[in-house]
Image (tube, rainbow, N blue to C red; front, side, top):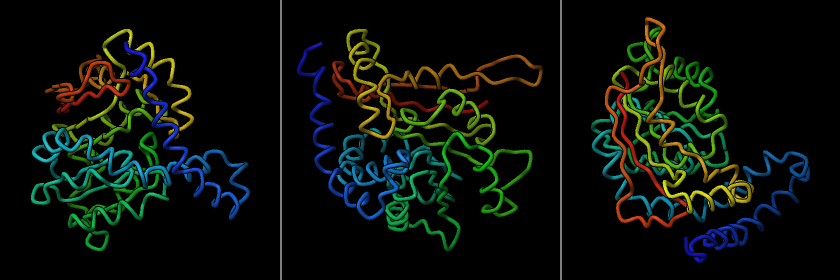
Length: 278
């Protein structure tokens, strides 16, 4: 791998620090206890960072998401790690009845609300639901949806979500394999879809070596984001327990592909996938 590519992420780290440190410092001066709450401080930093990075990151994957999300997402859509709600830009409102944005960083909720409202989804009519819990907290997700969804759309025996969307999220969530398994088992309906666009561990050993090398530093600068997770492999190989107690593939259909036009020597190597639950 070329050294210029191996060290390219340092530019993003430097730029991220440049744009986010001043507003984060102002937040600390306004609330000094943030210094003793590293998790809350990280969220303040990330919220400020994403104000600059968010639209550019979304634009970089626009064609891929148009092909992945727009023709496939339908019904009740749960967007895990919604960020600023960019996913809603790709939803076909004629096919999607509700947009549920799952974003534990409440500082990003105003941007989600603005994006969703512009796309025709509103809290007032129930077509927009914003949840502040993490993707790993399936009990809170199910409890919130049981209260928010009409009785005709909720059942104690059938999961409530038709389409799960994960856009650049599996890199950050805690216990990703357990979280993915629980979401698919408990939240996604049988026959429902999991749509994924993630940066993942490269298939090239030389690139993967550098991803593992930089992963601890990158995670410090970007709210726990790990560039060395084989998330596409975890999703593809996901197994669930059958009625007979045997482990079987979670998917009736599965397809993964690479982001078109992306260079192999890329520390942020992307994988795209569409999976249909058994």
